[in-house]
Length: 501
Ligand code: ADP
Ligand code: ADP
Ligand code: MG
Image (cartoon, rainbow, N blue to C red; front, top):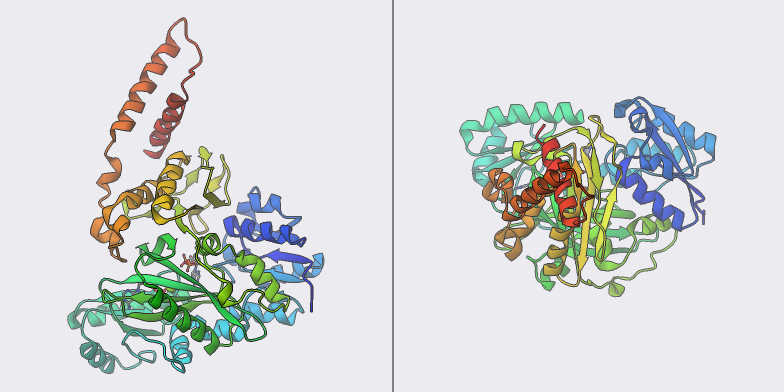
């Protein structure tokens, strides 16, 4: 069995650090690659060795396969971890890695290829009894035929890019009158984003929950699942809040969904870590959506409730070791919630907000985990995903995890850019989130940006304290401010001042 001694992480930010930390624990050396925009990033400093591979645009750096392979050759690397995004779901890359005599810490190029196409994935999964959303089984080439199918399924329908990802390339069609226009848009979006204009139709489930199952498979045909993650709080069809376990399913549904996920993985001879996504309607019927053949952004919530280090498992699997965990060994313990801290302005349609992190102080304490890749003073580059950090809390039950999350959000101090923190705080305290009656329409249905600008009594009190502190500062007998609360509120006030720009 090959033993991995040196891993190159072909990624940046929080996920690069996340992977390197586990590698270090396992006694494996790490190599970072970075773009010119990331020269001062923590992942670059953390690695044992680091190499600049090009200019800021990812096409010239993080997506530059030749350069990455050259670094491996030069530095005697034996395995590559691709993280998520970038080259992680690129079958051609996985193949090149293998051809270079290196280990790709992920599934086979064949599994990536099948599951990278939503249509091919459905086709593969159809060998098993997996419920699917009603729709067209193939890419649409005959529009009139597609319209007939849409009418028979019943509007609204969703046009989806087969090669889609990251919530892109999706269009809701409310009625036949809109069909052609939305179809044109979907095709051109898919072509521009994925270089593949193939689209298909699915029934649009109007009030669904997004629930996904984490799977692990080894090279010996063993596949297990590590329960579900609930990811229904989304904007632009992309997740912002995730939790495990889901409050919406029963042990029976969990078992059935788990079985389906393992079958989907089996249908493409899967090994490595993967995620099988489902959508669940109001009657708790669930349907297979797609499989992501990589480590998922929200994997920490699964780690918290199972005690499994998913990156460690990925590395052991890549070495050819059989899974040491059996399905029966796994148990859900406690509850974990993750929020994605994006540099985005929730009050302005969640548009990315770039800038400098003037203040960056992260929360800490019992049950709090922060996976991030930035430090105070750094800039959020425009070239990449605007995610600053993931904040994860863990408690013995959901209520505790929510309370810890609100506390942690309040401790988090970020100024210089707008973030999704206030939005996530709003979610944590919203009745629909607390009682579990939310679905993927949460933002559209419950979120009004005005709620973020209403000053709470707390804040008003803080401002008053700040003003009196400033006044006493200015007086001749001024002394240092002793009251910690005033200091905290002062920085919060500054935060709002910066945020206003
Ligand atoms: P997850 O699916 O892990 O919950 P996201 O959907 O946010 O998380 O995707 C993870 C990252 O991968 C994001 O940075 C997203 O922009 C990127 N991404 C996802 N799919 C694709 C794709 N097909 N092409 C390029 N980037 C993608
Ligand atoms: P991506 O590859 O972009 O992640 P997915 O198929 O996983 O694409 O869908 C992303 C999100 O879009 C889902 O989490 C869900 O919110 C929404 N969605 C996808 N398919 C449907 C559908 N048939 N009906 C309603 N919502 C859907
Ligand atoms: Mg998805």
